[in-house]
Amino acid sequence: MVLEIYLFVDPMKKHSLSAEESIEKISKKLNINCSVNFIPMLNLRALNDCKKRLKISSSIPYDVVLDYKAASFQGKKIGREFLMNLQNRLFNAKQNYCDQLVLQVAKQIGLDLDMFVDDRRSDLAMKIFQSDQRIIHRMKVTQPESAVIFNSAVEKSGLLIRNFDYPSLLHFCQRSLKSVNHFENLTQQNKAACNVSKISVLF
Image 1 (cartoon, rainbow, N blue to C red):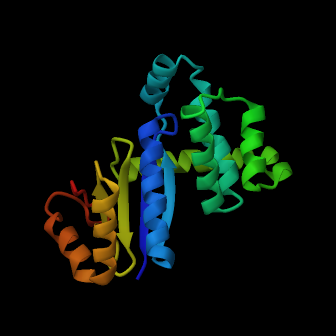
Image 2: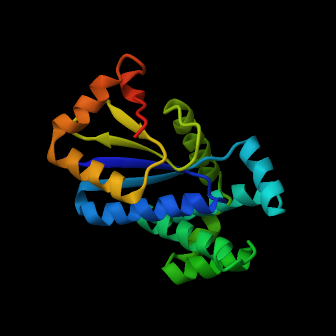
C-alpha cells in the first residue's frame, strides 16, 4: 500500500515552503510507503499579488517554476530539494533571484549543470508546467498549501486536505497506511458532494 501526496504550492510564499518541509518530513517518516509531488500554482492573480507584495517582476515566479521543473527532470526528490533550497535563499537569506543564484543552488545539490541549463527554458519544462495547471483544475484546488492524497489500495479516490499541520497530517497518513477502511470510509462519506476522483475533505 502506497500513499501518493500532491502538495499544491505558491513558490513565492513562505507558507508554502513550510508546507513543503512538513510534507518532506512526513515522506521520510513513511519511507517507501509515500510518493510526493509538489505542484506549483501560478495564475494571473498570483503573479500580480507577487509583484505587489515582493516588488519584483511578475516573470520571476514563472522562472522559478521552470527552474524547479528543470531540476525535477533529474529526479523528483532532487527537484523538491532544489525548490526548497532556492526558496530558503529567497525568503530567509533575502537573496535576489538571478541566474547566478539559481546555478549556485543547482551546483550545491549536485545537479548536472549542463543538463539543467539546457532544460531551464525548454519547451518540455513549459509543457509540464501547463500540465500542472490542468491537474490543479481537475482536482479543484483553489488555494496553495493544500494537499491531495491518494491511497493505492482505494481505486480512483482522493482526499483534498486544507490547512493541515505536520502532526495531524502525519497521524492521518500513518493511519491510512495501517487501515484501508480509514481512507476508504472518508472517501465514501463525501461521494454525495464530489466526483469520486475529486473527493474534497476539509481535514
